[in-house]
Image 1 (spheres, rainbow, N blue to C red):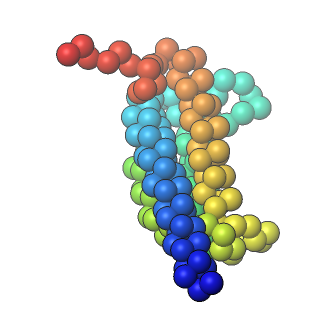
Image 2: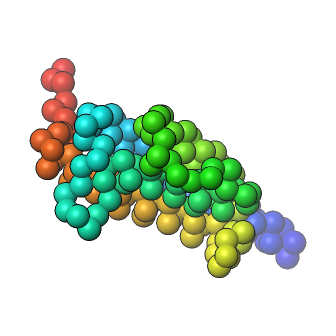
Length: 164
């Protein structure tokens, strides 16, 4: 009986490890594509917004950075180390990169702990927070692509690939 329980615990840990490996791989792709795309905006593009009722490029990039810290601090079980307001920073794009790095460490921190509760106002599983991170990043990467297309820019992942 005890051996069966140990085997189930080991399989559960292994399955969660596979989840975090895949989460990290997907998030690395989002980081690469987002960072490689936002650097294409000129400083004069930072105040652009497609319509009056949506965020500017600066506000959107800052929002992603702020949300990364908010979501990932919950995954790590710590107080958010960022005070927000990233959209007001002059070094906005490097700040976004640092927020992605913080989240990469948070994904490592949830390895084998997906069912632990977060420290959020409404506690949820850390696995939920990890999936929300991917969902949120994908949503706003889609926004960035739209902004880029309107400005005549090509997102990183849509650039022609060099021929071998």
